[in-house]
Length: 302
Image (cartoon, rainbow, N blue to C red; front, side):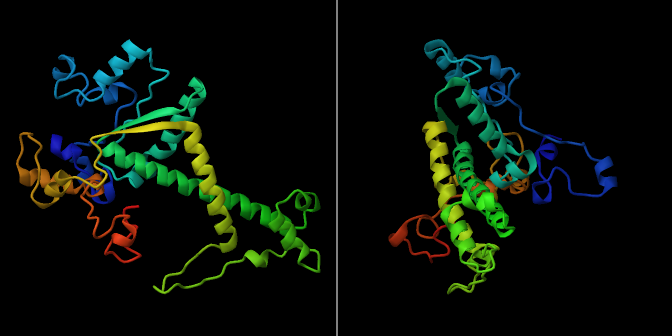
């Protein structure tokens, strides 16, 4: 029953079968806990969680206790960000909105305390945090692009008051049209192919997208400077770990009372298993000139 509840269906869903199969199943739908209790120990409320700090069940309980006793931290200044460790980071956002919630909680904590945060991540949490930063960068670029497109299209509609307040590129586009309408064709979609045959840009306004990337990256750096003072990685598998690879190849029961074969079926259903697999620096890491990987493959782990 435990293994069945923990196993994910196809595409990392809770269930992937017919209505009849659902009625005959255990109706398991697991979600992570919330708050500091969810990160204090592996099994809150169990017998081992009541033992002395430092037991094998302890995760952050000792650190939370020490910060409270020695530095005066409390629930308003320590924020727990538990997540469903079975899911890959992109699914965490798709299903639970975890990355969006993480951003809002960090911003709220910094606003409440008036100081940037100290981010502490454990194990796979380091990979999730790294993914969060790249996701945030992408989001800020998209937001900047939406603003640029909105401004360009307003100028195209001959909004005089808006044009005079606009950046130089909109005024330039407007002034370049003899009929008095903004020449947004200057920024229109162009499908250009690179040497690999892949389209460089699928944006309606590729030039605006280049501007948006620069602005978004600036906003990204500013956000980190305002909200994150430092980052501490505990047991960080930044190059992956052998355990997840072993779980895919032969199964890893992690000392639990079921076979390696049964564990393998369970672990193959987790998107996080592949997320934490080892990364070869000779194949796909950000090694630059020292890497033997092709240009397209070199950035797979970046």
